[in-house]
Image (cartoon, rainbow, N blue to C red; front, side, top):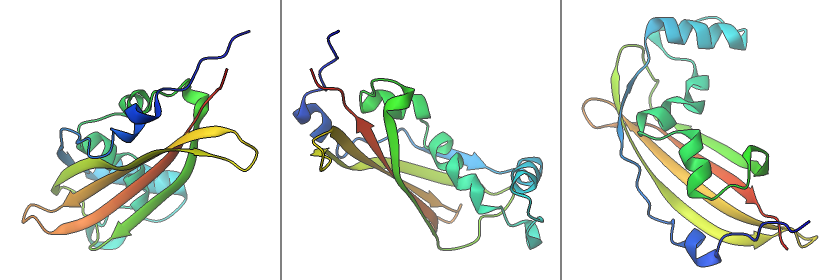
Length: 151
């Protein structure tokens, strides 16, 4: 059986600088309640949003989807993605019912190999979240490995 060759290394490197459309996201009370409940925690005071929202809020608010992020890196399948890290930086508490501006772009994209020779592409996405005044509230940096098959 012939395995699919990985995408050209130059195509992956060319992803650096790719910008997502950007947009807005507002966390409503019901969403914060459900997210907080599923973590087993109590609601935070003063309408603060549980940080677990940073798994999906930046992606949706930036006008993209997980599927598009998979496609940009030419993932072989849903199972070919490996997570290196999710780095969350919070500069201010996220609050319910605030319309946040989210911008995102790809900061790194390159071909690498594990010690055992298995090839992967490492792609890093940065999402910046700002409040209505334009002040930075949070930043998420997601780094994924797109594991490649070689023929």
